[in-house]
Length: 146
Image (cartoon, rainbow, N blue to C red; front, side):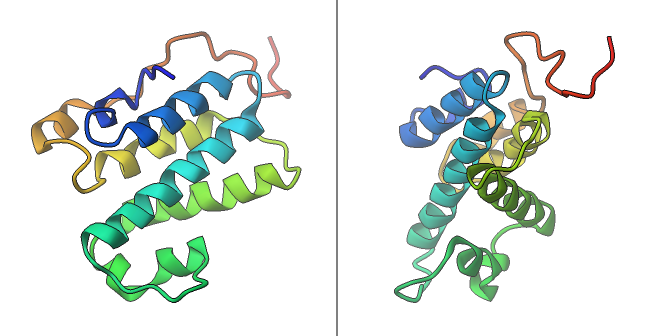
């Protein structure tokens, strides 16, 4: 699915661009699906980093186990790790019945994909500094007053 914000990943990591595109597609009408897709995107990015850096994992490591491993934490800045954890937690909550507005995780998902090793060139990463919305996002918050 074509993406507004994750298309820069398509050349080297089309599966990540697809997940980002699906997250964007669901952001307005199905925030839980959006969060689930973003969680999958960040989990796949994490596994790619493990493969690229040849980091060792235990056979039944959870996504959280991968994120808190010291060898992984030495590779990415804390700000990125925090956003990855936020997407993991919100994605889990969404899949298990939590009710969310998808704006926070969509905005938060931008930086982890920008820092994904091997996803794109440094110059392309620098160009992707703002999140672009291709459709109106008003009224995502059910408590929003007109």
